[in-house]
Length: 89
Ligand SMILES: [Zn+2]
Ligand SMILES: [Zn+2]
Ligand SMILES: [Zn+2]
Image (tube, rainbow, N blue to C red; front, side):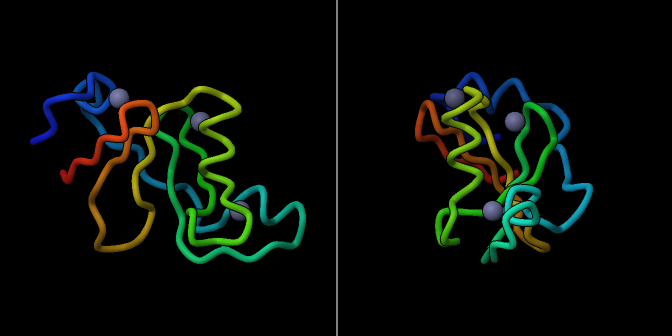
């Protein structure tokens, strides 16, 4: 981990991978997503900020879960909302 300013990302030793490549909130409302992100606190997967509903960000704000990982194949990075920190792994 190259990130120095975020204790949340530093504390992650095993990156949670998505169980399903679906946004669980979009499924409920029939929404569509662009990219998917996996919450590193609870392991759930939701859609990115490019998606119309931005469920990953809404989940982070609602729950206080700070760190997401990209759920996209071939992408290996983490992002912390509370510190606006980004790290590749
Ligand atoms: Zn952080
Ligand atoms: Zn969504
Ligand atoms: Zn969560």
